[in-house]
Image (tube, rainbow, N blue to C red; front, side, top):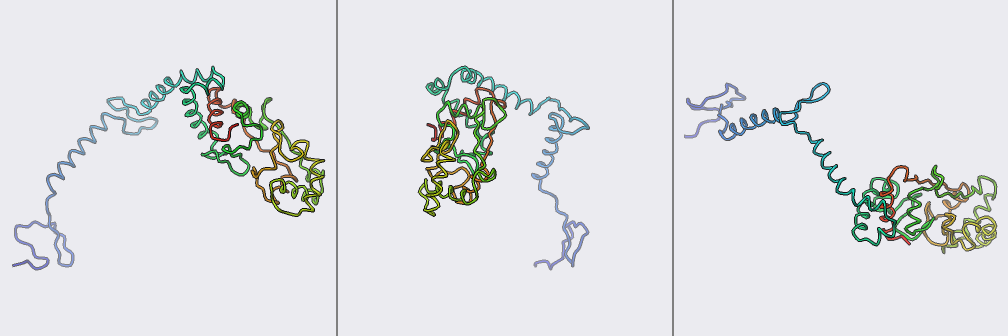
Length: 288
C-alpha cells in the first residue's frame, strides 16, 4: 500500500526538517560523486604546491616546479624573433625591387606588412584599407603623391605634413577664410569643380567658376582639374572624394582648406617594417 504524503518508514532517516507535513530525508551522496569530490580536493592541494597560486603582498607563491607562463611566452617570442631575424635582415639590406622579385622575401614582407598595417595604420585607413572621410582609400587608383612602390615607401617613411625635413608637404589656401574669394565666388568655383566629375548643377555658376578656377586653382590642380602628384594636388575630375563630393563639403574645402596629417613612420618603425608596409600597401590593388 502506498504511503500517504509525509509518511516515512521506521528505517528511513530524516534531517528533522519539515515543511507543510513534508519531511526531508537524509539520503547519502552517491559514492562516485564523493570520490570525485575528494579527488578534486587532492588535485587542488597538489596544484597549490606545484604551481604559482597564492597572491602575496608584492608577489605570489612560485610553486615547487617554478613554472611561469610569462617565461614561456617570452621564450616563444624570442624564438619567433630569432627565426624572423634572417628574413628581416635581408629585407633591411635589400631595395624594394629586389624584395618584390624574390618570392620568399616577398611572401614574408607581405605577411609582416599586413601585421604592421593592422597595428599601426588600420585605426585611420580601416582594417581593409578602405579609408574613411579624411583618410584615403588605399585600394583605389587615386594617389595624391603617386602610387608607385617608391612613392608609397617615401610617403610611409616621411609622412604627410609631419615634423620631418623630408615629409610630403602641400598647402591649399583657405580662399574664403583669407578673403581671396568672396562667398558667391566660392560657390561658383564649387559648381565648376563638381561639373568636372559629371555632376549636374547650375551651369551659369559653373561657367563663372571656370574662370575663377583658371586664375586660382589651375596652377596646382591643372587646367582640367586632373591633379598633380608632384604637388599632392588631387584629381578633381574623377568621382573619388577624400572629404566628400557634395556641394556643401566642396564649399567648405575651398573656404577653409584641408590639412590632413600622417606621421613619419620611420621615427616609430624600423626600416624593414617600413619596407614591408610599402610592399603590402602597394599589393592591395591600387598601387601603380
